[in-house]
Image 1 (cartoon, rainbow, N blue to C red):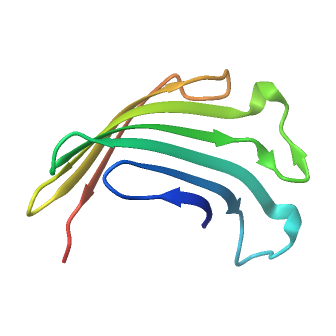
Image 2 (image 1 turned 180 degrees about the horizontal axis):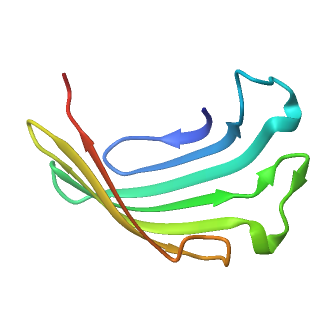
Length: 113
């Protein structure tokens, strides 16, 4: 579960999500809260296409961040394509730290019912 801290949406936009609760239903203790921010900056190219840069981080638990060598930081270049029938979000990511996956491909398909 993410808590949006800052978001501007329109044709072009910036979005930032900060906190992620781990084991929300197992333990509501604050010790399980992690700082896992995600940032997205998008530019509308046409009515159907947006280009974006997304950055994902995992610093670990809020009370005690992980060592820098164990933190995860990734940067994605993303294209969003919206059609009448389907929305597609595809991106290629690169790890920015030793604990990150070096190369990641993401694909999200969205169909309104």
